[in-house]
Image (cartoon, rainbow, N blue to C red; front, side, top):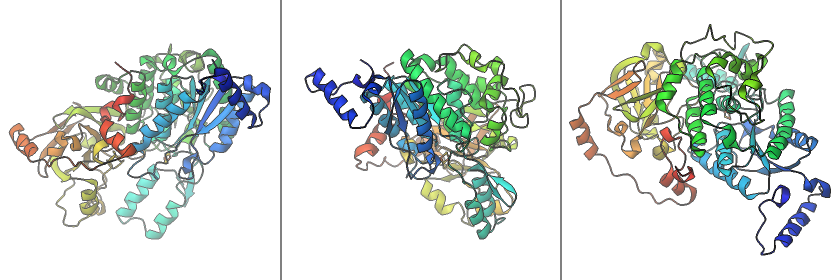
Length: 561
Ligand code: FES
């Protein structure tokens, strides 16, 4: 059964169920003939609490136009939306809730395919995780990036420039008045963060996976190209529905490897690795950390976008978009990978864009960095792994052995980091505990601020280690996602101020240089885990969330082995 008759409500009389469904659809004023068309759901995520999705209503209209022109019946439906800076303790906690929302609504409602319209960091992975589990034909349309603002002749874009100016404000270089002006010019249009942060990285990854139309990642939210992409995506969804092309035909080990190559070549966000792991996991595909490191060592960084370069997403769009990057990488990609429209990646790429701005997308022969952005670390401090974004880090700190200065929680960090009496030096290693998925919902707190007294003395970077995440727009020598997390009794929980920690990016190691006997003694002294009584979704999250190495998905959402 397809179209509006898919998945009938049970009344014990199938003909009555069909009759009733038609009767209620007539209430929507659609022509009776249109009810016989393939039904294309449009999963929307508009919310006043998500300014990044502000233009979605207009974009959704363009999708509907494309669906109708191609002979389909568009049916828009809302899901929850996750505005990155509006959810306490962090949007990360609610990604899986949105994934469940999308999965169940795609499965339960009568649609032959779905267009997923999202953009802000967690929304795209949530939509794809849900659609992958639902197993219905699906295509992603991202809202597109913001355009840049201006401040005293300087281009500004959320959110690398947010952090840059905030760091200068903390260091006393920028006044109260100036930071207020900057605040009003950082995010000036609809759309997602303007740099290669998590939202932009996810948009590129989705295109590389083949789950979106070609050249759809970078078109700005307010550009007419975005609306044209909306129409084309709507039309493509009808073809996908007719072909019955489900995500498992598109997202394979080959396309996930292609997506990892792209993640590395664009200097993408560390968060994207968590999301890609979770998305692939929904289809029974795993990311091998050793393979990630191997890919990282053999994939140059080609894209000069902030936070690792100087440009913004709108510049990437004007420079050939992601197809320019893919074309440059073609010898490193599996071009036989199928895409959602039925062509292979190689067929999509063709001869590549007519013109590429080499200031923005470097040629493979002259990359901005010889090696990819991410390194998966292992060692006694992170037995199941940790991640460093070497493309955003200071190479001078890649090989560091230093004294730990430990903060036991986010509250402890906030209370002491700027204390003038804090015993800390530039050569120390800042450690934050209990900020992992269970400990605190895994906020983007891994970008520990440089202690104010050091910042004022001109220190701009230090080695910082935590089980938290970091915004894709941030930069620094920052080790994240330490697994197992401290709240689960991982070795991170055993670090004490004064311990020696060794980071070696060349060896992909992160080690706590403390004798095992001493660590066992400390383990025995660890406090019992809190057993606060939780209800509803928060209980579900606490009982079922997996570690960062498994994408922080819920254990019960993974397919049977
Ligand atoms: Fe929405 Fe950055 S806050 S993409």
